[in-house]
Image 1 (cartoon, one colour):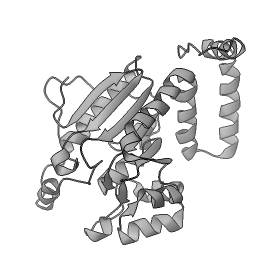
Image 2 (tube, rainbow, N blue to C red; image 1 turned 120 degrees about the vertical axis):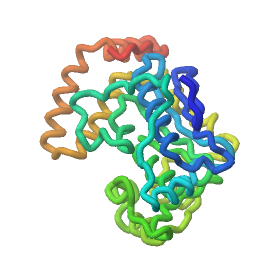
Image 3 (cartoon, helix red, strand yellow; image 1 turned 60 degrees about the vertical axis):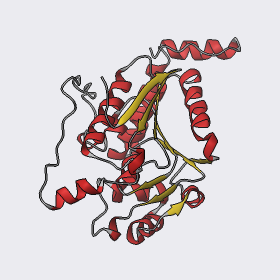
Length: 276
């Protein structure tokens, strides 16, 4: 299907979603949110895709919620939206996904494939909150980050008060939330908010190079199950985590991907993983 506020392409096992309102620094709208979810869940269901990358067009990644949308909400405006009439139904999430990961912002954690943010510019407010649900964040050296909520009379939205302390620690989370200040990419890296800072003109090439390595050298079955372990363990304890990991390890021994992983190592060649 065609999208109005994002770009979507698949190549080399990588699905790339680009927020595409560059004149508004890719400010988030309800329609954009619906399109992003459709694209990410469609990519997750596509066997040709192994990794998903999300970035922004132009100078910004996502400057937060669109101000016209916020003004509308002040007046009790509609908070729902729909995709175009030709949009296919969203691919379902697995039955065993916790309810907390089925929401309109948390669903990226329920996807079976790695989701990487390539933050090319400012990521503020909702633009920051949403990417906390992605698996990794790589930043341009021109990127800036801020929650801004306290400066708009708002609160820590969409679970950001839960996620931020787990990524950067309670003291950094309090700083980012209470002050609403913008930080640069180097400070974000020092806090642990991003995985890596990359020279601006090299951001997408290096992110795609990393994504391609995941797509070609790592078992999609392993990635799927490890992602489920990472986020599923938020809802359990150490004992249950150990039990599940031990059971899954035994199951892994009988898979085609395990056999291929061993064979490719012994034969000194790239693996040909199938996800089975």
